[in-house]
Length: 354
Ligand SMILES: Cc1ncc(C[n+]2csc(CCOP(=O)(O)OP(=O)(O)O)c2C)c(N)n1
Image (cartoon, rainbow, N blue to C red; front, side, top):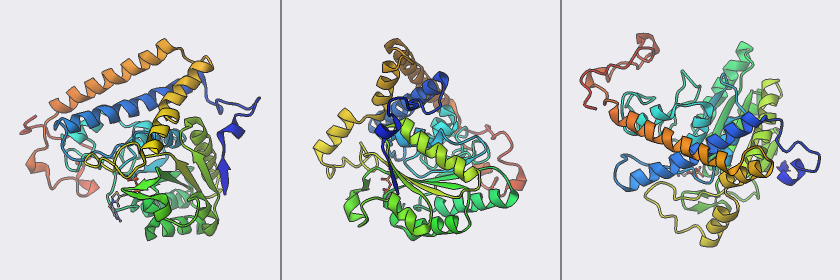
């Protein structure tokens, strides 16, 4: 098991930008800010009673989501769980359609058929629709990776789950199978230190999740997820190794869940000092903006413009979602099988109540 230390990666003379161009660094800043703002505004709408369903905030964990998903190519696939919307946005999902999904409208990715956080765009951006049973997407990711290998395609599958999900048998089975068959897959554990109200020491006895990789015969890396560049560097290495036939890697991204498990949970079980320290000193979005300013890639004005851009995009997405109709009942049995062409067709807008 390797503990990836940003200090080591940033030794004098080392490439602090980990091979990324100015434009790519700015894109990362935009994505981090987009994900943060989306999360904040959606929570506000939820608390005002204007957003139905549940919300699972990923605030404070953007370094994990943006960093790992940015390492994937469009043809690679992502298998996320309930808290990983930011990874899906990084993979390219359209904010407007995500918002339509949250309000149950036909322009949402599942055309108004599923709960708001069960978003995914398998046929487009290759992100698997979120499934509730944790971590059921891990074995499915194994299946995708096996298909890529058997067809001789240079593609990679990436599964993400939380620390709590690692206690489920499916997690162990998926890792074992992927190692035995040297599948092109990357396993990301978003260790935000809590599974609902259960802290890490009550979830597992080993000091780190990454060291479990040894039990399956694959490399394990633990990374400080407040540093998006380090997460990206580690993920890119794992993705490229998988693509070249080197088999799976387990990456443990360590952060803290800033909000409760879902919108209803005030998370009083998280020590106040721990939370304050993470929010004050370890904010992955603020840290990355400061780094880019310090290195002269952007100035304060440009950071403000990025913020304005994401705010405008959010408002546009909100208007789009509210204007999108609800699905029509006549369509409910369509699209159960791919051969009826439902998912390839335009959704029927007649009869919707917008
Ligand atoms: C097999 C299974 N058991 C229980 C649940 C209920 N459940 C939903 S989220 C959650 C906590 C998951 O914690 P973790 O994996 O650490 O992810 P996090 O929510 O912290 O991102 C639980 C127990 C579930 N969805 N699936």
